[in-house]
Image (cartoon, rainbow, N blue to C red; front, side, top):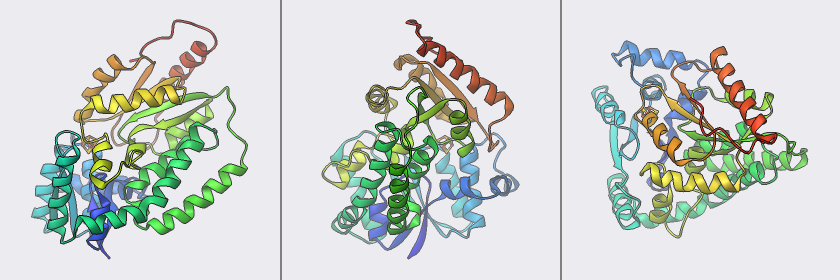
Length: 340
Ligand code: SF4
């Protein structure tokens, strides 16, 4: 299969039906043993220092890993992708644009999917058959998510790792299923996490800290039991068709659609506090204002740039936040609403 890079979660069913192997460039960037090297490729080629690291990382991956074709999302993700697309064209890559509709409407989504299928030389019937093939993988990751919050048997990091990887199913959905089945079997044998542990939600784009943040939280008596956008990547509400599936996916649309989903999950998962991660120089950071207005729980906003680990300064802020949550749990009726 010919590899096709993707800049965010897209209808991979259409890509696979067209004979492509989708590769989520974000996941390649963040799991590279030396992500700083990928950033410097972009900076040497002229990307500004104040450009988001994910964009520079994606560019570095394309050049460094010999990616020849990229599907770039032009509506519903990031305005920087549009200019990234132009630079990739300049470098000789084949660039295919894909636009999510501007609102979650399955008729509009159907048209976008049809256009993509025609561009790639496939049909939506073939893509629907791939949707059925992917169903076991989507069911398994949903089971892992349930084991995380309902039975407290899965770490926040494993939850993140498997949900975030569902954007391309580690490039091989059969392998993804096999490995995840093993992990779930192991988790079922483990003791569950203690009930006194704080329960956290992580909202916002995936962070550059990777495992470091999740492990640090767990080392300090707290566990992420809701990874918001990562969960969305797994298509938790598949509906009855591809068009419904990608209309129910909240990430490309208004922040208020995301908030509706977040509020349901905060209650269901008995969340004590929220970590909102924002990437430096990202327009989504402004959404912090809306989240603080809409969510009635303590919120810690963390901004990351190109440190791929938690600095001491961040650790101190996280610890202070967890202290407040612990004290709040121990009896105060007046929970602090927000932390800056
Ligand atoms: S973090 Fe923000 S600026 Fe960076 S790629 Fe994602 S949406 Fe774009």
